[in-house]
Length: 357
Image 1: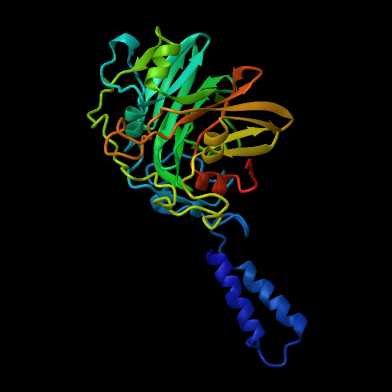
Image 2: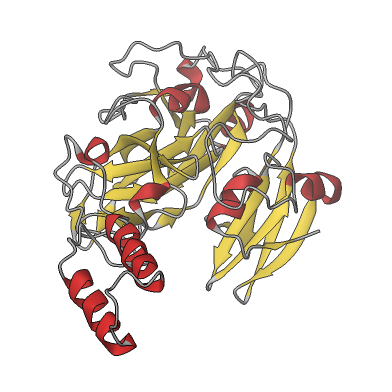
């Protein structure tokens, strides 16, 4: 930014004839070039944004010379690094031991190699990341309440296992994670590393879904459930974002493409990405049609509606939220990876997404 302003000043002086009386145009251009050559270059070149601020880099061992987005796209969400603590040593109880969940209450359901687990949103809303091992696979189960993004990732990358924490930063109102091995920064939406040694790498998203607690118990009576015994004292069961998911309300923090009015900002959508194509099915459409067939990247997928799931972002209590329902996406009868974010997040990160009407 400093260099850009300085270039503008030099060019403005040249245009005003301040290069000295009697100079030819060629002499003026050579003088401008000499002046530009002496200007300090504080970071990436034009089009790459300026260097990160001290407030952004303090306390980090991240390789900030490597990044795929402008640093000015990041902003503090309030808490510092690890101020929202990830759960690194999760404990579980059997489904029949659970007495703190209501029938319609939302949980993130994940099954790997026959190992079925439920991660209650009432816990994830306070921690946002759980580092776990399910069916022998290291996974990160994540939830960003600001975007309503509930995504499970495989933590393995090129032969090593990563552990994730919260940076305290946001981009387009979405959680920015970091791995503790390299302190690279990762966007939860899409699972791509944006800053640091691992810039450009992408985590594999695992098939998971938000379901009502009663549905999880019915489908997985022997399943295990993340316990409230997290090692942290939090008001589990309370929703600190009461009223946040009012469909026409904007997000708390600035986002790109906020003027995209194809859907209301907080319309829930089913997001599916395949073969470089992004398709969304609005909940308003799915609720009415119940089943929607879509082609995404050449794959025929079935999107199914399920009623009876409470919003975790509506009432003061997670269990008391209105019924917003949920969805699942299948290919030949098998669950595939998808997400159920608010529309504003899709507009920000995937502005070319095709909407099924």
